[in-house]
Length: 407
Image (tube, rainbow, N blue to C red; front, top):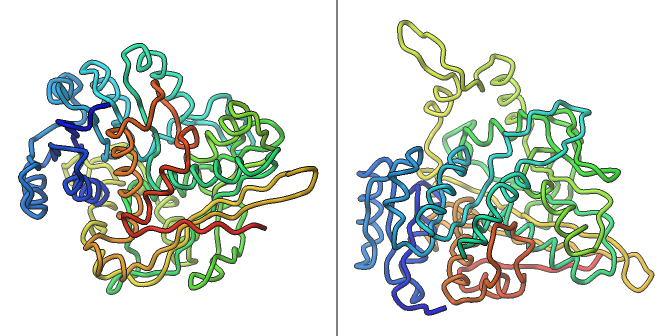
């Protein structure tokens, strides 16, 4: 693929979109980076902050397929950095415009099964099935979940699986001992997404099937690498365990007996999110409040600080990675592969929060590899279907690491 005259659009100029736009504006692979947002002023402020001639801005409504299709014409790659509920509309518009697509999260909230029930088709796999044939026929790609987790966590699972003859367990663990100065409760990513992910029944893969379990299940004091240390973790619904058992287990033929995702949550955060759920404040159904129709979740989200504004106040460390265990040459073997970061260091170096930066970097890497012609497959696919080495090799270029520990 010719890397000259490549054009990308970053749709949604929030915390992560700002990172991806900033990074891609400094690469030689793209000659044009368009910042698109429903809030044009927001996009223009980011354009001014990046201050690069190849960057421009425009107003785009992620709920308007026809408008997006028109805006996407001539764009080589659309980076979807808005909340996942708009994924299908954006993918429809990309198909109409024959523009390639990448996102960092899927609408896992499409799953309506209750705890104890088997999930016949996880939402991410539904997204893949819905679009893959059409995208392949159109000669375009859809890279799903190209963030940190999902994203690098999937790539790390693939790296571990590639070292094994047979895979037994895949465990994704996200730990953070940090806090935001001046706030008792301040999520470092979309509050709306956090509330949804944590309150909904999580999915695991066990006994050959995807299954729902109770919210806040599987509390585990997980020992993350220093300086994160021991952090209480809980099962949370996420994208990784919706694809890894199928794509590593079946498509790549490695097998998989069990897979789950757990995230570190402090007791105070757990109590706060449980209270939001008990009071019904997680609902998206609008209610009448003194003559004004509002969704309770929108009120909660609006009451919390914008994650993009918190980078300079964040303190502490994060570690995100995957434990992949199985058999090699007839013996039990496993790998813990992770990336680590310090909130204050990342802010001082890059002027982005560590949380946003480590999601935006893999998205930018996927864009660069696409522009370099190193992603050859067409259709729609999860991160574990990429060759992991080119992705990992590019992490140091952006200040991120990949640490491999044999278990």
